Length: 260
Image (spheres, rainbow, N blue to C red):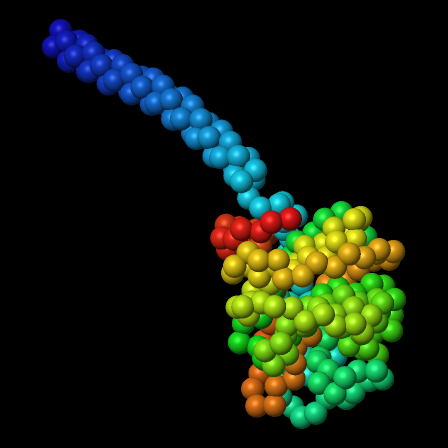
């Protein structure tokens, strides 16, 4: 009986020791977690501060950067959009129908789904490997008359165009030839609706290509045209500048110096 009592007493002491060790372990773990949480919180605050300070260093258009998509219901010619509505393809399927007042070399046109009635906005588009493209904005009136006129040929559209190596700014059928040493492969477009400013940048060099000063009275839509190639598919891509729910962490950022 005495031996059993001694045996159980020993086991109880061992259990007490184990329990004490476990308690000490959890106390240490809790303290460590608390320290780690403080470190993590400090890291989060540091990252947040860096982001806020970086905003001040970034060029102003980035403050207004947003993603836009193509509205395939506005497409004319041989245009097809990708599933995510960010890439435009123009297939060489023969001559395109010409609409009244369009030039012979008129391109296939499409509008963005988004439109703007106030504020500042900035978006980018890749135009590399294209022999001809037109990028700009149109107002509500142009959209209602859709496809009757090429971009830049009336008072309702403002556009920058590259055609056979010549870069021009167009509005109300007036053309201004621009002197740009390097043809842009990626364009930045900045719109200040209230001030009536529409500015185009060469993202690769940071140079301002052209600035329109207008009085926007109705909603304006980003607009795009691709020259119909005779032997190959021509493609134009809208750049993803802002992370979305489907693109967490994926941000298409290019270093650039853009003056406003």
